[in-house]
Length: 189
Image (cartoon, rainbow, N blue to C red):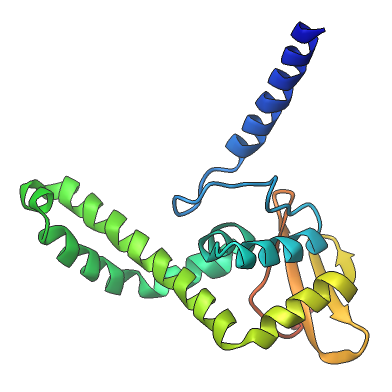
């Protein structure tokens, strides 16, 4: 009996590791589908709330927000944070020994990390400064009416007509979009 249990546990652990390996880390943040499920839009809202409760704003930015939004936002501030990264690298003993491509790569890595941490900090600040947004997320998780249409979804509340949550399906995972209104319809040709 004991070997059968050990074998079963091994298969389960292998499946979990394979699922986590299928989604690489983003911005050095590991994907955790067990704690932050994204199988449905409802799951994604609950995962955002779990991340807020656990103070994991880095996870929200890396794995729960629309990746196109996060990447575009980070692209707009990349140059500034690379300059900060260059200053930080130059101030270290290791920075003084780096040359050429090694120095450029280190500056780029430090800048990217600072940039990402800044965005996660801005998300934290926005949610802390506007606690009604978190209350609304809890209402959407509890009472929201979710409608899916292919690779998009919308969550609404019966008694609220001017707000909705929007979602995007990418590679089998639902992400929350950073927008407050319905996207305009594509022009007909």
